[in-house]
Image (tube, rainbow, N blue to C red; front, side):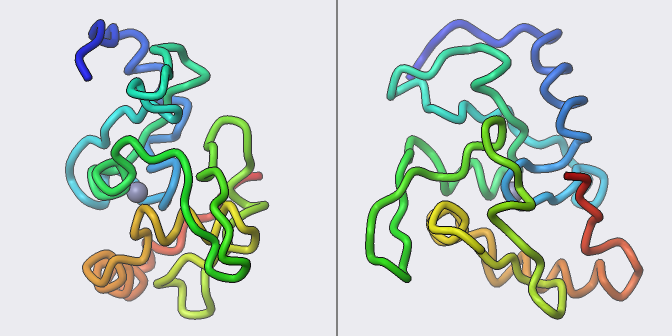
Length: 144
Ligand SMILES: [Zn+2]
C-alpha cells in the first residue's frame, strides 16, 4: 500500500532506538551484514501510521513473513491472538532463548503466535544462530 515515505530522520530514530536489532527475532544488523527494514507494527493496510510508536526495526525475514498480518494462532490454545507489539510489549516477557540458544521460545500466547507467524525459527536462521554461538556472538543479552 503506497503511502508517504518515511523521513530519513524517522528511520534513523527507529534504527537507533532498536539498537540495530530486529524487534522480533533480535538479530543484529551487523551479524547479517545488511540493514533491517522499518516495519509498521500495525500495517498501513490496517490503518497503521508513519509515527514513531508504530514503527520498529525488523529483519527482512520477519518483516517479509509478517507482511500485513496482525494476528497469529497460538498453538497451545488454538486461538487467534494479536502479534507481539515491540513498542507496547517487552520482548523478555513474551520470549526466551531455548536451551541451545538457536531457537526462540514463546512464553505467552502473543510470543508463540508471533514465532509461528513470522517464522522466527526458520531452519536457515537456526543454522546461522548455531554458527554465531560457536563464535560467541549469540544469543544476545536483552536489556529489559
Ligand atoms: Zn527478525
